[in-house]
Image (cartoon, rainbow over all chains, first blue to last red; front, side, top):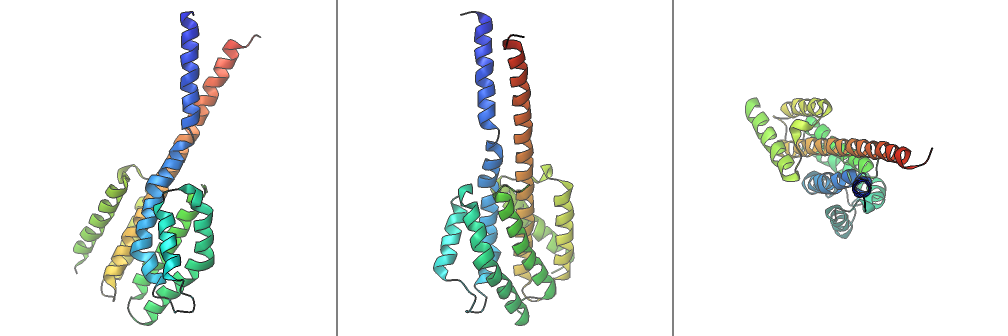
Length: 133
Length: 100
């Protein structure tokens, strides 16, 4: 085998590896940075406010546990399900919970603004998890 | 709680969370800095309100989420650059190998 053939083969291998690698960086960032950040926000702020919602709109503890497990899985394949459950079930309860705390004077109006914004940032993160740029 | 103390607490929370997640805040964009400053202003207005600790915690979550979104944007941009690099190199290789 000629030296030029070896170089050509090596170049092909490197390009092939780069081709495989491209696309992985975004996925890894979603799994190793975005999902853990979402998981933290869920535990610290999202879930406690959902649990403050009136019983009529409050999801079960099992449903909330299951959502936390999906976030902790660090698997972007769950992006669609996470978003669907957020929109259908969790977001209305979260908003109702923050409003209930505000009405009960457990938090103030500026605090409520910040906590409502956690819901918005969480939703933006869900969109990004599913590939939105 | 005095205003400087809030800022110290807030920054410490954000830096700790970002460190734990491996986010390099210095590499993030101006958008993140603007968002962080705006959040801090709202937080300063919330000092005398009930549930301030909860607001502080939420603010740190918000800024961390924003930084994580920026990290994903940076990673996606790197992916695009890699794809363009490979496409270009493959095109050059094809031109060199294929008969004219």
